[in-house]
Image (tube, rainbow, N blue to C red; front, side, top):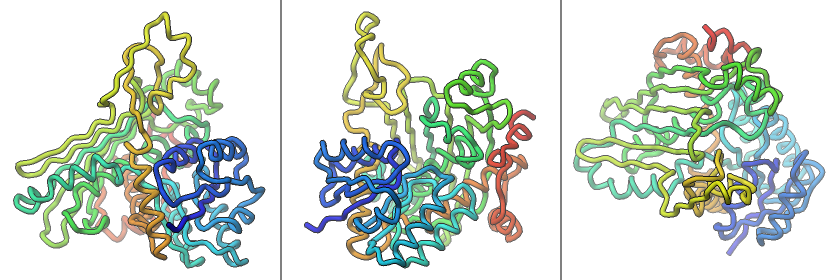
Length: 414
C-alpha cells in the first residue's frame, strides 16, 4: 500500500485530534511537524502510537522537503503567511502531492480567496477539512434514506447545532485573531453539514445554490461581568472592550437549480453549553421520512461519585470540552471516528495519491466562508440578505465584520 507522508504545521488541539484519528487510517504516516509550541509532544505521541517518526522541523520550508502533503493546523490569523511559505518551498523543489487546511478556510472572503489563489499558483490539489460531513452517522442516514428521497423527494429542512462551553486557546476567543466568535468558529461546521444533508442523492456538494441568509449574533453568557472577569483571567481576552458572540442562529435558503425548489438549512451554535461537553445535533426532514443525530447519545455511560472525583485528572478523557469529572458522564469511546476525522483523512489520502482534490477542496471552503460572512452581515443589518444580488456579493468580497474588527460592542451591546 502506498503511503502519504503527512506534515503538520501546528501542534495544538486539532493537530493532536487528527493524530488520534490517524490511528484508524491505513497508508498515512505522520512524518513531521513544525510549530512554535507543542511540536516535541506531538512528535513523541506519534512515535509512541506507531504513526511515524514525526520529525520536528525548524521551519515550514524544511518540513515541505520531507513530506508528501502538508496540513495547515495553525491558528486562523497565521494561515496566509504559512501557505505563502509552502508555495515558496514548492517553487524551490519540494515535491508535494497536496495541501490541507482545517476549517475555516479564511477569516474573511479576501483571506479565503488568497489561499485558493496560492494553492493554484503552486498547482497543488487541496483538501478542506470539514469533518462533520464525513460523520458515519450522517453518511449512513443518507444512504438508508436514499430510496425514500428518490421516491418522495429530497430533504427540505436540515437543522444543525454544535455547542460547548468555549474554546481551549486565547486566540479563539479574540475576534480580531480568530475572525469572529462562535459563528466563525463553529457555524462553518453547521452550515456545511446542512448544505450537504439537503443536497439530493448523487449531486456534488455545491449543487444547491445559496440564495438567502438571515442570522442573529448575541453575547449571552460571556458578556456578563462575572464571566468577563473569568475570561480575562484565564485567557487574557477582555470582552468589555473587544467582545465576540457566544451564540448565533440563522437560516440559509438554497435553491435546487434543476427543479427550482427552495430548501432550508438552520444553524445554531454556542459557547455556553455547560452540560457534558461537546454536543453535535443534526436532523433532516423530508416528505414522509426523517433522521436525527445526537453525539451525546452513547452506548457507554460512566458514573463517578464525589468521593472518587479527586482521582480524575482530566474531564476531557470522557468527551471533548467536558466540563465535569463527576456524576453521570457521557463517554464516547472513539470521538475522532464519531466526528468524521477518520473518514476525511481517508478521503484526503485517496485523492492526493490519485493526483486530485479531496471531496471538499479549498474552493468549497471559500463558499462556506462566503456564507459565514453573509451571516455576519445579515446579523449586523438585522436583514435577510439576498445572495443573488450582485451588489451584495461585491460588498461581501471586501467585508470584515464589526466583531472581527474588534468593534463587537456596536452590535452585541446595542
